[in-house]
Amino acid sequence: MANILVTSMGLSPGIVTEGISYVKNNLNIKIDKVLVITTQRAINDYKDLLLSYAKTEMKFNNIVFHVLPKEDIEDYRDQLEMIKKMRDAILEADPKNNEVVVNIAGGRKTMSADLLLLSYMFNVNYIIHVLSDSAEAIWREISENVKNKSYDELKPELKEKVKKAFQPEDLSAVTYPLFILKDKNYMKAVYLYLNNNARFISNLKYKGKSLKEYVDRYKLRENADVVKSLINFLEDTIPERAYNNKEKYELKKGGHPVKDIDYNRIESIVKEIEEIEFVYRIHRIDFNVTSKECKAEGGDYTDYDDLKIVGYKVFLTLPMKNSHAITLELHTTAYTKDQLEYVKNLLINLKECKK
Image (cartoon, rainbow, N blue to C red):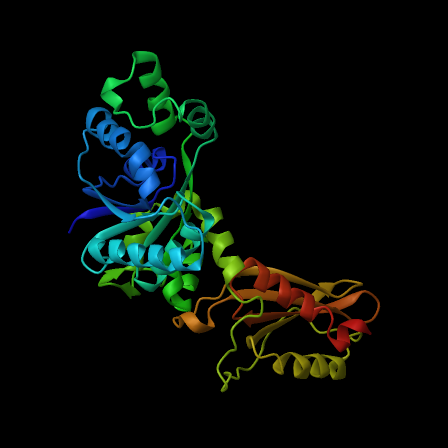
């Protein structure tokens, strides 16, 4: 299995070297081959510079170009031809049998969008978009001075600037772990894992490996907040529907019922909650509560063996008379931050909470 970087490139060849550096330094993946998708103009202006720099400063000399034989992408016909070049590059990389990382930072915005889409379609695991403010500024300064030149023929001062543009100290990247988007169960298992619930991550498989292997490979725990935000954004705000045959359990009761508890009201709120499709179980009623207002609070995740019904516990407090109240422990299928907020907001707007 080879480690292959597929990257788009416009008129900033440092995008290629930044991609190699980021993958090596941040993912501990040593790239064996780079496939560059670009235009004829970029090849004419900067191919020699890129190849000579990579060979001299990075000891890397396995770069292959997939070139649109035009100066630029000028219309939809050019875009379609470029998409074919991208497809050919990804097929050559062979994501089924190799470790393929795609860098979408180079070239026009259409190139980034098309390359991201094709990467998803061809089961690429991981996307990066490298970023560096310093590299961009230096490249604007020197780009005309290094056009049609090799790195080795440059004067020392210009070499130093190229090095800062091609391997900047402030290099970072926006990352897209595409493998988790292939199945909603993958998204949920990874999200739970990043919230310290590791129950399902090792049992789910993708391309013959457990999800945990991919999470470790791409160091997703180090960017847990970013990955969770991505899943939270992509997942539906409304939680998944629980099974049609919701399990009925005799409610556990805590505390001591008092004379100010209205049992008809409890029955009414329970009926309302049972109509909510993403509440799997009303697990417990606690009578030993005081509150003058209806409120909903999130707790830990439930501890079921079935990933589909695991979600946040939500505690709904319903005031009765004379500051007495009850709290119901609800087991929901909500697992993301936004889903939890949706559930809490829905609960405090139930009819019985409005009384």
